[in-house]
Length: 174
Ligand code: SF4
Image 1 (cartoon, rainbow, N blue to C red):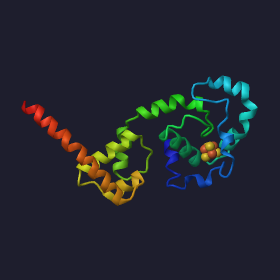
Image 2 (image 1 turned 180 degrees about the horizontal axis):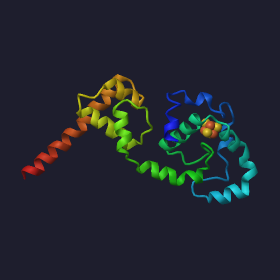
Image 3 (image 1 turned 90 degrees about the vertical axis):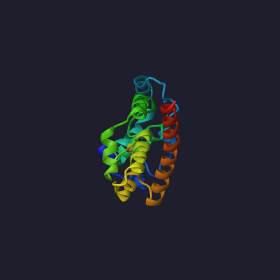
């Protein structure tokens, strides 16, 4: 699924969404919430959920995958995304927040526009900031930022490292 999300890159990924132009309220049914029992929600409110679920089922796979990844990245607690109820995404959301995949980080450092969690993104920036051999254009593409913005992020990351290095120096000397 994450691989499919990469097929809908850029800011305008939602242009081809099947729900584009639809009333967003339809995708946030009152009966669904992150702590509900999804089986109960589907069983008791199935008909009311059919419309948004049918939209998602007809959505192009790449768009649907990106929709799910975006909802995980932004920790969207409510609403139907990629055919999944809020209650069905609870576990996925928790797993996503914990993810620190070294392969995803390595791929991003080589320019792959793979989906990254916040901590993976920070690791990419920190490693780029310390490694002058990495290709800045490729890393900027992977993170979806301009070259200038990447350099700013790298410089902030270095500034954060300096006090940390000094404090470990002084604790070592004591
Ligand atoms: S998967 Fe569903 S909510 Fe997401 S963009 Fe497609 S139709 Fe819209």
